[in-house]
Length: 206
Image 1 (cartoon, rainbow, N blue to C red):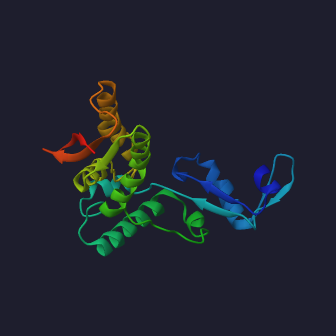
Image 2: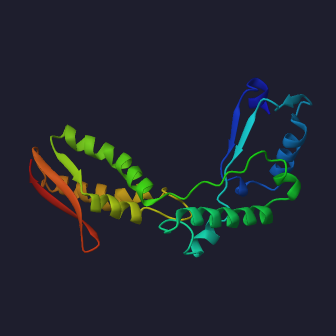
């Protein structure tokens, strides 16, 4: 209430709202119903100019167990329709109808595609490429390496979140070992590809 009282034109984000204490939904129901909350000092706080966004991972476990839905599904349009239906079913199980009915818009995000994931990989390895460039070395990722990282770093429940850890363990750690062992020197190129299901690091002159 204090934040909204001071800045009524605000956006409130409740991330992974399903993890909140059950009482929070009674409070949210009051906000959505009346547009007003009373704070601890008895002051009425107006939420009518406030946008409330709630994110949730409801249905992620069910989607993980359903091989026809999620990352890598062949029919994207059918995949999304099936996923949307499954998530809405989980939503109805988790929340009371009076709460769901007061939400203005319910949006089910599309699953990340392999192309999406490869673009995320490119963004996340860019700092590594720039860091080595400052040392006079070139770091190049073959398309096969980007694909490998995209697949290994994806989780149906967590999306692209595990990708950072995947890049750290499969790329950063190995690069650190090469640098500490002085196996890579200024003016050389490190090309990362895939061999036998694992990343392969080749070093050559630029």
